[in-house]
Image (cartoon, rainbow, N blue to C red; front, side, top):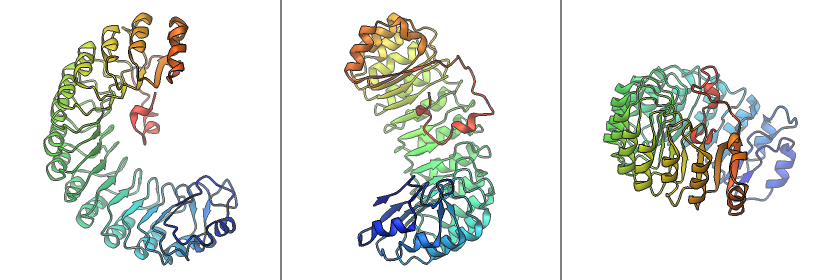
Length: 419
């Protein structure tokens, strides 16, 4: 494997010299680089021709590059059995270029066309017709792809294991078609406003191998859709239902049946409370990551069962919740807790925070509001830093609701990673 990502001054001349004689080359990453100009990374025929001699090359990643027509033709003529092609955010990629390329590499297993905003129904038609053995298709924010195209994916790509349709026009008919992909384990449907419980229920009843489901801001989804996932997907390990105002404690009760659940993100779900969190704590003892930021109805009564049953918890964001010193100190008894984000807890005092910090022996990262910094004994901060804990001080003002104009900018990551 050769990774030249962000090496923007490396041209085909340097690449050719570097890989000369490396007969075992299987993967090459030229993302955000490979250009004579650092401002305009280009994939040209000269660059691709450097790869012609490598018969074992299976994976090519060109994310963030400008793909020229000569580069497309050169990639299409590669003799190696390319199984993975990543073209995320590639400027210049059109239906003509992508269609020409996939028709020449029909054994593709993984294709990433995230944010390729010029492709349309035509590309999906040819991809699904040519590459029927696809196991992974990532196509977040392909804004010109219509809802009808997603029906083709389910009808033709029955081996699919991963689909990222985040921020797309997919609807219930598309979901019903995709439910034919019985091996599906990862399904990302964040910011998909056209899907509802009807389509999700079909997925839940047909895709029992699902391990990861992302429904971030898919606002038409309610408890009924989540119930179908809870009933039909016992292998579920991660689910993101953040910022869906139709979600209540009933959804958490449904998800408590998923004994393998490791990551739960319910940020901004105003209808959930400590009652639902109790069900999760009792039923999902493998839980390691929990994001309950802006779940205003979760209080100390939710922390106590977590302390009792969720001994595998490693990361939690409880900013803006109604948790006090009592709940935080109880949470601190979890021996594996490593990462906490604690911003704008109205019931938290410096003494309670100090007691909780000292009780958390495994902490490596804590995000706190800067106002607490002068109020905590410096000896405690020094002690914890000496034992490997890093403090991140934030000075953000209290924010009850996220700016609706900016929420899309925060997507494309695990919400637990955002302050």
